[in-house]
Image (cartoon, rainbow, N blue to C red; front, side, top):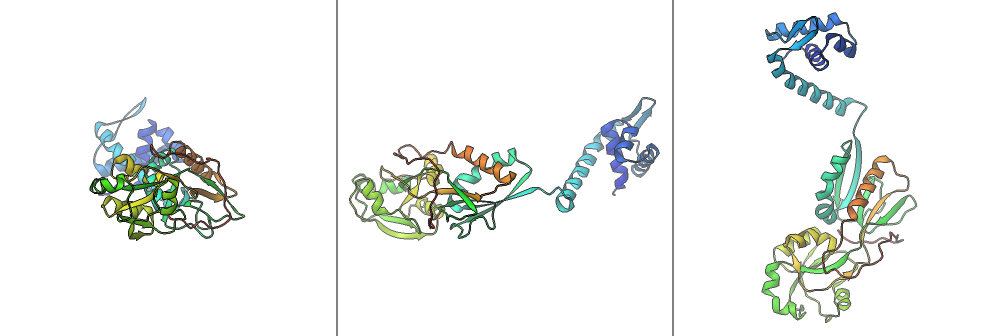
Length: 316
């Protein structure tokens, strides 16, 4: 059985305000109308809800048990009505981010953002490649490389290092070869699209220029790391993308050494930002301050943001 809605609204207002007169003023009706709604609700429930006196009204014990259900139902109905039909729609922020940095770095931090800015609803899209025309269908893009345009601005978010990683079991199985840097016959995983190569990494770390045996190619580092965990082979990966897996011990460095990344992850927005974008960008910069390459990542480049004028087709 469903009691009349107007009667429930009157009951909740009187219970909350402690006065029929105060409830009448809030509801913009007469005191007589409120009293009539309370009477109709008591008749419907066949139960007294208030004890009336010259000092006002007090809830009966039954009404005290009933009130939380009424209050919660009315609040939920009001909220859903506002979301679907009201003018006070939540501010939607459209964020596009590449798979690896989104999965391994951004999403684990988003609880903090949603708690600080509950009035902003995030519409998050995970992608493999940078947009050819950034910020057309998104307010914010976090991507590995970018295309410079007249209408957007870009800031480099991190200074990262290239590391050679593998699973603990893989390292144990090939301990002797890895210890002496003999990787020519070892299986490896390659992520498509990166500009930096195995040969560059080997030369930077003064290793013999012998390529490993590439047995698997994938479109992004997130899937590459999963293949590493399965013991398929070793892989070159950016320090920030592998940070969580390195800290958990699910992957380890196959060979000591690193190489500064020339390309990197950028925050891209329109030149003119609205409030919700500024909120997100300010929050994001605070998160990046605590993100450093894992121990042993070695030398770092300047952390000053800079731009590039040609597309950087690097994967997440």
